[in-house]
Length: 423
Image 1: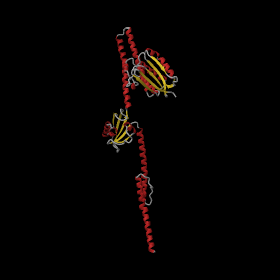
Image 2 (image 1 turned 120 degrees about the vertical axis):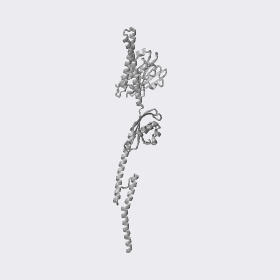
Image 3 (image 1 turned 45 degrees about the horizontal axis):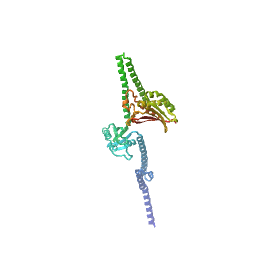
Image 4 (image 1 turned 30 degrees about the horizontal axis):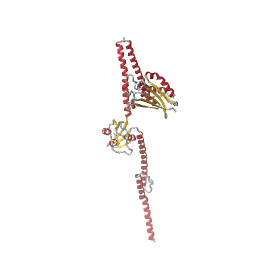
């Protein structure tokens, strides 16, 4: 009996020691192992507070601090990523980031749109992605020289075919431990180049149009200075020519100034409720003598329920005058010039038609350009300034409207202005 009690006591003591060892040296480290696995696998740990072993407790607290710190860093990374995506997504220019081997690392939505790339296209070299050797050479030079490079290229394929792009490649990693490579920016400058070309053409055309009457003035003034005693008949002829060119010069200056005012950022309209029917009747009365002098018949047609227009009446009259002037110039004696108005949905269509020579199909898209004349044979002194239709287009656009042109060679032309109806 005594021996059995002693063995039992020994067993209890050993069990107590084993339990103490388990609690202090084994269980805490198993908890530490489980905690470490959870942190590595980005799982939420069952607990951070480890009891029984001071060392294990400190390790548990260190893991808790580490987890909190990593959570903060992950949040910052997510915020930074969202910010980068927001900035890239809002950019109107195409952007791509490549590494030192010109492998694509990052691209924005506009870059994908410019080159017609799917969303799943995210790797490969720049050359493999966009198939443009000039861009690849530009980026390679930027990385090699560590200097920004810029070049204009013409796209010959994809949804942006025919567009002109200004490509800027800026090297990465200079004086830092960043990834080496380059940021490449694609800016569509097609419209800018077109505007520059239009400006150059405008200056050249104005210079040409001014030079003709000025040369005539100078020639006849020299004639009068050399021989002031001209016969009365010759003197009247010279003065008549100078008067015509003076009128032409004055008309050109007025049209250029009018177009400049219409194209200025601060262009404004003096809007009022316009009775279109009354305005059309008034205009046709003003043009009766001009039609008769050109041996032309006129026709006015509009429904009785024309709505009021909220428009600048003076500018609207200028539009119709320009359309009528164009029709008269390109009509043959005996023809008819028609002025019509009709309701077209929520807009009013005002049209001027002639029975003249018509305009070739390839010329139609360009007739509203400044100084463009479809009939080059009518570009002499009896032609207009070449700005009438351009002025009409700008006035229509200021009213929120549009212009259209239809023509058939040998049968005539119809120019229409569509303006919104007052609500």
